[in-house]
Image (cartoon, rainbow, N blue to C red; front, side, top):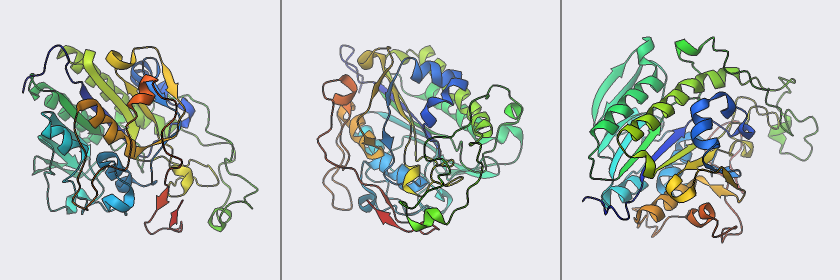
Length: 375
């Protein structure tokens, strides 16, 4: 149905990064579109976390608003992820035109359903920079090793095309998920020698900590490396193509007359330790849960930058979007009647300073060098 012009629901565009922590904002300074759109004009949740520090469980939590033990995607392999109850299905049922472009869950190529429920237009895959298969509304499309196959640029092109085709009379929900900057941190050819990413090394408190007697034994087993701090140059150079994509999307929304009432979101499926407590290129310990969570929506939030310090989680995003759009999450096929996360709208508007919960859950239930934990 056409929207009521007196009270239109916002278009919602979420940029979901891969393995990117907030890094106290130092990298955003080298990324002009992210800085302009989110840092200078948006709201930042400064204590945002993924419930679990791995890709597929984090993505499932973002999409469903459920704890890991409820959505069931415990491991990196997401081929069996149940997509029947997500924020996409909820928004679609309320008249939103839904678009997915990019990484859906890991090992998506093994999934039996190549066009998951809830997406009017689905262009998804399991990840990769080159030599991958993208499934466009269920049809397999191979991309090779040419420069034009670099996945972030492919995702950007498809996103622009999808926005152009979106029905003008319907609100829009777009989930844009580049592979950047997951290992192996591949950089677009045009950015490999960029001088734009001259940022200080990452050396936070606890970096390559020497005295770890108060930490689990598996922390002490790790060697101390990179004593001078973590060099973020390659990660930042890989993010330059993501930054260009965000700029392209903002310009496209403006051209289509949608930007004024668009809620833009920047977050990640999980973080990365980058040296915290001796975890270098790893994220599976509790030190890899912090993620960026920034929003820009001038109609509700204005354009003066602001921050919220309350601890929030990835499972809070889907309930927040449904609170804004008027949809309902649940009941789910696993028997849960409602989402586990909570809406952040009152925190966003300043109507509330704290959430009505005493604790959040952090867990890791996959198989790796880190023991399974639940806290």
